[in-house]
Amino acid sequence: MRRIGIDVGGTNTDAVLIEAGRLLRSVKAPTTEDVTGGIVAALQRLAPGPGVDAVMIGTTHFVNAVVQRRHLARVGGLRIGAPATVSLPAFTDWPEDLRAAVDGGFWAVAGGHDYDGRAFLPLDRAAVEAAGLEMRARGLRAVAVTALFSPLTGEHEREAAEILGRILPDAAITCSHEVGGIGLLERENGALLNAALVPLAAATVRRFEAAIAALGIAAPLYLTQNDGTVTDARRAARFPVFSFACGPTNSMRGAAWLSGLRDAVVVDVGGTTADFGHLRGGFPREANAVVQVGGVRTLFRMPDLVSIGLGGGSLVDAATGEVGPRSVGYRLTSEALVFGGETLTATDVAVAAGLVALGDAARVRDLPPDLPERVMARIRARIEEHVDRVKTAAGDVTLIAVGGGAFLVPDRLAGVARVLRVPHGDCANAVGAAIAQVSGEVDQIYQGLSREQAIAAARRLAEARAEAAGAAPGTLSLVEAEDMPVAYLPGNAMRVRVKVVGDIAAA
Image 1 (cartoon, rainbow, N blue to C red):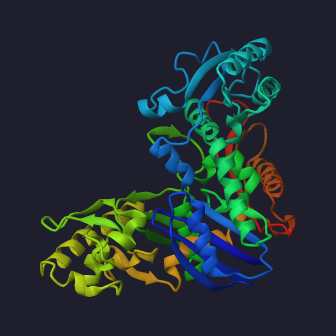
Image 2 (image 1 turned 60 degrees about the vertical axis):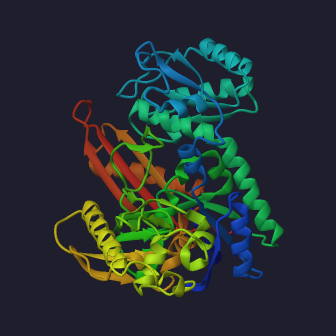
């Protein structure tokens, strides 16, 4: 296939053209405040020509909306599980400013299932209807439905969503079993965030599609997800939370493809942040614990990453040698000293140290002679510390350094056997988007089956989900399978996680 991969970062928008497993071209353009402007500029520079089969975009637009508390819809939270689950209402423990932007009310009704899959109580349909009428009276257009143990069976969530859909035909309704796993409050939080973002996601996808069409590119649009795979634009607009960490994930997938390595530590240094992660089988290792997003505890698939405020645009204190966490971001090419600005950044220090040739080096000749050495010593110490944090075993590792700010990574580091720099590594994020596959994942409890039978059943379900998401059936392969006995359940119960991936089905 002939694919375009695009990654919208905080500083640059990168684009690559890949055909028949070869990277033909890569370009960069400054990210714009409206996001689409940077995409259009990058595509114009890329000049892909006719015959594009797919466009894959990775964007931090949705997670930025949560972090910055902007463009969020007010959400009605419906929890099915009363009276057992009402002591902690929805939006509990949320940051006050985020709660003020999203909280549209909380309703609890009877229903849900118990830990063994049996109905806890019948769904109170009348109460669901009453809640829907109150939501309509409040003018809500986003709803999150969460039921007790719904990952075992989403029956009550789907039934409640159908009732609410009749009362609120224009509302964006998110069912929690489609977003997260076992863990009521964290799964509910993920559903609430997703519902708050659906209107923004729908508008963003429409703008992406319009930008691509305006350039004469007649190809389906896909958005990248947290696990290094893609989904079609329509599904991405329904589940924006699955794209929260797609930027660093794309970089890790791109690093694996460009280097040919399937197991290594990756550092992606951009203009604002440096992200550290561990490749396992060519995919980022996933976090098994609760992940906080914008100060909210959530529970859905996310890569196990460590991020620090270190990048090419990071501000440098000339007196102390401190670097970051503040950054000039996408204004690097206008505010950094070497580009004619008045702000001392990590890029300026790297130019002064002879690590990279950018802009006008004459503008940093008057920096204190010892400053580059002091700053690079601090950067070295921070990188060594965070490489150690993402290691899974003692000993030296291979570190793949990618991203536009990879010149900040020293060639020699404690705990690192070698630092590998790959061609086109500055656009690894866009490469990761372009090569992404479609995934299907299952995280479910099975009872009364042997280990082999449970994994086989989960794999069949995962493959069906992958095909529904657009994967070609003959290309599906198993990425990971994990099982864990659940001692407190009867019937040889076990929790099984299975993930499969496959190539995008031809249109």
